[in-house]
Image 1: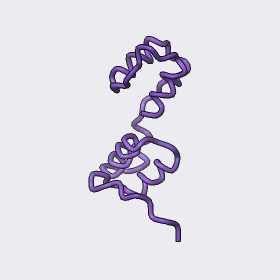
Image 2 (image 1 turned 180 degrees about the horizontal axis):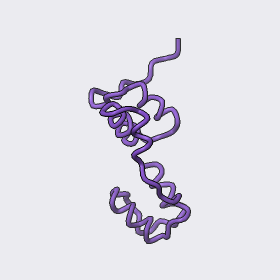
Image 3 (image 1 turned 30 degrees about the vertical axis):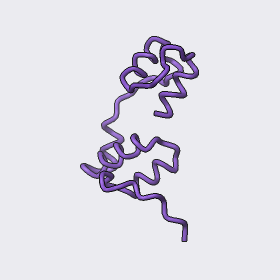
Image 4 (image 1 turned 120 degrees about the vertical axis):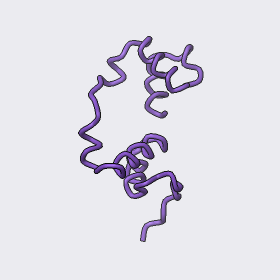
Amino acid sequence: MAPKQEDPGPSVKDPELYEKLRDEGNSKEKSARIANAAANSSRSEVGERGGSSPSYEEWTVAELRERAAELDVEGRSTMTKDQLVDALRDH
């Protein structure tokens, strides 16, 4: 039997999906949001609702800094484009 993952807490409504998303490398925050959205409807509907956006590599530095500001990424004003992309993906 595989070792049990750390309990995500009572705020996560679909722990199985949460753990799958964490195993794929998603942040705790993103995994919890997706798992809770799936629990409120259905897993297939959650994927269909998402919009489309170009990958961060296609964004300008100004756009990346604006998004980083929305997410309160510290040090964004001095980051290079690559550092901004990494910080946004890790958020």
